Length: 169
Image (cartoon, rainbow, N blue to C red; front, top):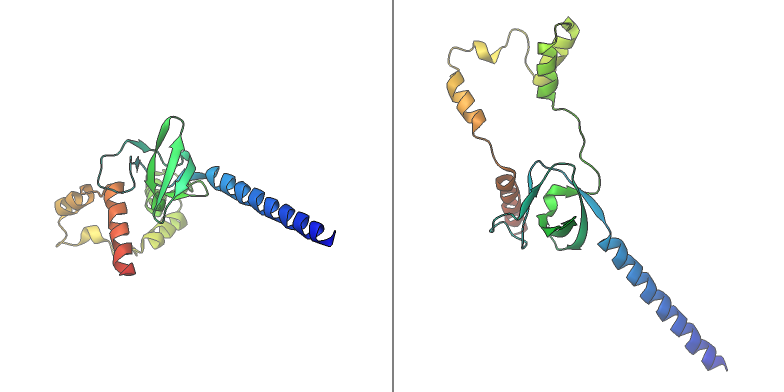
């Protein structure tokens, strides 16, 4: 009789563990994440070698179907593919403006106060006497050309992933 109770107890314990494992898998499969970058690529296979199937906007929500060390297999409506883990987070991206945008708004505002302009200068690290644009050696055209040479999100991700691999080696 005592042996039957032990057997029944072990059976119930085993069934409980199996159910708990299934619930954990369901939680992982139902995990929602948010795109953190602008124009994030979704690939057919994990890897940056192929052409993107589609691109998602910053703030878009995706459902994680599977994960590897550096990639998530995701689904959004009819789209299913792989995204680097660097572009996804559990929380929506912050919608705060950059400090440069704040400074530009202050400069453009007709009702700006002197303290606000001073604060914007402090944010940029520029004192009133030290204006880079007043430097005679500064070539504005070269500066504009450099600013126009943007880096795509895919290139940035590829650079970060290569750096990660170098660190691991």
